[in-house]
Length: 249
Image (cartoon, rainbow, N blue to C red; front, side, top):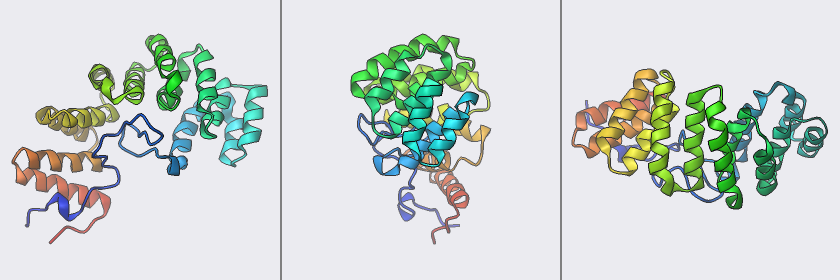
């Protein structure tokens, strides 16, 4: 069986070689998917999923799903919850106004929304992060709190990697079945050339979910860099199988 080269399939769309987080409108998500301005649907779905978790937000969510954003904003401002108005403002580009609302909410349930939006309004990043730090200890899901704390640090600035890593490590330990913290840990370790630690993070993620195509791809690259073409080829073939790609000849 021939050894497959990463160059033979190119970089997959979920592989962000330059790093996932940037202080710009093209900031990405921790799982590696891109949140660029031209792909607002991804942002919409991410935020809508969080908004759907608030039962009283359901009528306004339906308006957003039908692209009636103006009506949705009026609905949320009249009936609540305030998180709904913040989401609509964020989706329509009013990130400063969205941040102002989110910073006024003193409830742990706002934490995921803070974690998704911090960094989009640079003037509010420090205040959003301070709100996350205040609310995280009271959040019902400690692993989620740690994950979104890390997300906030990285979205605020890629230079906050050293501060984010301990939160991701705690998130990975607190949620024995979750993979998103491990995937991000692997990415950060690899960016720091801490390849052995990156391999362990991705392997741990695969032990929890063997269907993670992104983890297989990154391990193929890491094992290739570490001089192990055999393991590199195995993970690359797993990646191709999971993505429905024909093996290179």
